Image (cartoon, rainbow, N blue to C red; front, side, top):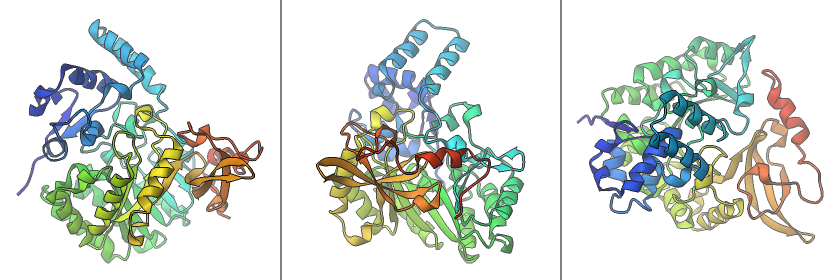
Length: 442
C-alpha cells in the first residue's frame, strides 16, 4: 500500500498535530532559527521516530527541528528583533544572508574541488581525489527531511551562488570519457533518492555501457532509508528503483548505497528494515556513515548499538565523521579528544565484523584526516593522525603528529608537534587544490 509523504517546512509546521503541545519558546526558536538554517521534516519522522513526550532531549527532534542554541546569541537576537519589528522582507533577507555567509557555508575548500572541461566550469562535479568524483544532479538538490547539522545546508537555503548542481548528463559523460583514472562516481546532493526512477536511470544507465569500463562503482549518498524508507517500498516508482539497482548489478558494476544513520532509533522501524532487505536483494551494498554529534550520539554505547544493528541487518559500518565546521557546528561539535575516546570505547565493544568503520575522520582541504589516537612521546603529548584520502595519493596512510589541544574540535585548530612549523603536506595542498583541473596521479 502506497504511503504518501507529507512535508513540513517553516511555512506550515504549526499544522503538525504534536506541535500544539510544545512550549511557546520552542515554537519561537523554530521560527527564528529556521529563518537562517533550512528546516524541513515529514510525517514518517514525526509519527515513527520522534519521542514527543521528551522533546527537550529527544535526538530525532533535535535532528529535524531547529533549536535556540544552533545560532549564536547575537545572530538569534538580530533575527528576533527584525521579526518583532515587522521589518521589511528585503531587509530581513539581507541580514539573514549576511549571517549565513558568516557560518562558513562551503567548508573544507569545496570550491577547489570543482573541475573544468576545457573552459567550462562543472559546477555539478567535485573531483578531489583521482579515483572518485562527486556528482550533484540538479533534480536531487533537496531531501525528504533536513538534518540540522547538515554541512550542505546552502544547497537548500536559496544561496544559488554557492550551490553545487548540474543538469547536463552530456558534460558528466564527456568528463568521465577523458578522466580514465576515475573508478567511482558518487551521486550526492541534497539526496539523489528524491529523484524519480526515470530521472535517476537517465544518469546511471549510460555508465553501464562498455564505454565506461573504467567506472567500477556507482555510489548513491542518501538519508532516505532513515527519513523515508517507503522510497524503496511503496512509492509509485519504488519497483522501478529496485529494478534499476538490479540492472546496475547485472551490468557487473558495484552499487553502494551510502546510507546516513545518526542514531539507533532510525533502524528500529519495520519500514526501514524491509527497505534494507529489499535493497540488499538487488545485489547492492549498503555502507553506513554518520558524524559524531553532541546531543545526538555522543555516547559509546549508542555507536556500538548502531554498528551492531547495522551489521545484523546486513549493512557495512563505514565512517564516523567529525561534523564539518559550518552551519550549526557550535551546537553539535565535540573536542577531538572526546570524539576519539567515544570511537575507541564503542569499537572495543563490538566484534571484528563490525570493525569496518573508520574514524573519527575530518574532511580538510588536504583530504580525509583520521584521528588515530593520543600519545606522549619524549614528554610531549600529541595527536596521532593519518590521511585516509589525500589530494596527493602519496600522502595516504602516512602517520603525522599534532600538538595536543583539549579544546580543538577541527583540524585547522591543530598545530604541528615537535617544533615543526608546518605539517608535511601544507606547502603542496593549496597548489594542488587551486590547479585548474589538475590532479596528482603519481
